[in-house]
Amino acid sequence: MKKEIYNDTKQGTIQWVVKETYSKLVDYRKQDDRQAFNNELLRLMPQVKNYVAKRLKTAILSGKLNKGMFSPNDFTDQLFIEVYDNWEYIENETELRPYLFKKVDELLDDSLTEEEFDHMFFENIDTFSQPEWDAMEEDFSTDGDGDLVMLEELDDRSLIQDDYTLNHVFVTDEEKELAEKLDRSLDKERLERHIHMVLGKMSSTMRSTFQLATEQGFTVNEIASIRGTTLGEVEDLLTRARRLLKDSLVKRFLIDSN
Image 1 (cartoon, rainbow, N blue to C red):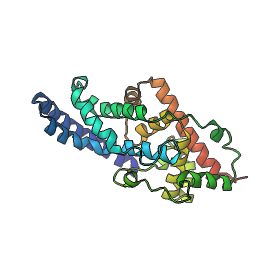
Image 2 (cartoon, rainbow, N blue to C red; image 1 turned 90 degrees about the vertical axis):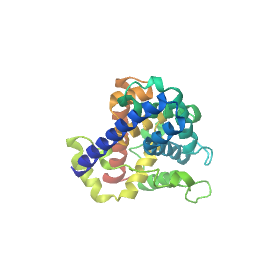
Image 3 (cartoon, helix red, strand yellow; image 1 turned 45 degrees about the vertical axis):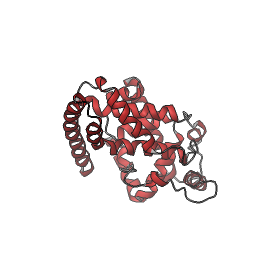
């Protein structure tokens, strides 16, 4: 319950900031004051940068992107230009925040290679032994030399915030008992490592849809607009992502391994 109250308060604060920022951006855009416009837009950038950093970090850890190829600033710096030059497409305050994520998603998709769904991982989820689970997690968390991957700017905890919890995966009343059992047996760090690993096995489309919903608090309608897809596709992706995460947690931590 405390988590739900926290999330409601957090979303309310975000909405208030967006409303205030939008009003000022309208004025600065009319005045053609790009510097003041960008300074005001900075207020909304921390969460966008957080989202970009997580997408880049997952791509690096899953071997889809070379470390050091991109920085979050590469995308957010371009986003300032995109928003200013295309301001006429943002008709009201409710469209501002979804537009930021829509544009940065497009920039990311243009730069990152589309990742295919790791069918083999999920097809064999029932058969993995505990040593195999541990080996997969270690492979995901280390580089070729066996040292922990240091992602420099992406390791900045000010960027990688609001890490995953069981509430992101177990969302129905029927699943609460499973969540409570896992909560008693897993520490926060191990839970986060596992969820990051499983997200890395998903396609980028499924993963970003899950992140937009759980971390950024966007509705299904907003995500459909951001990702340029249908409501049905968003709902299906969220359902599948949560089911895959739930199954992996149950199979690894609640059912005796082979």
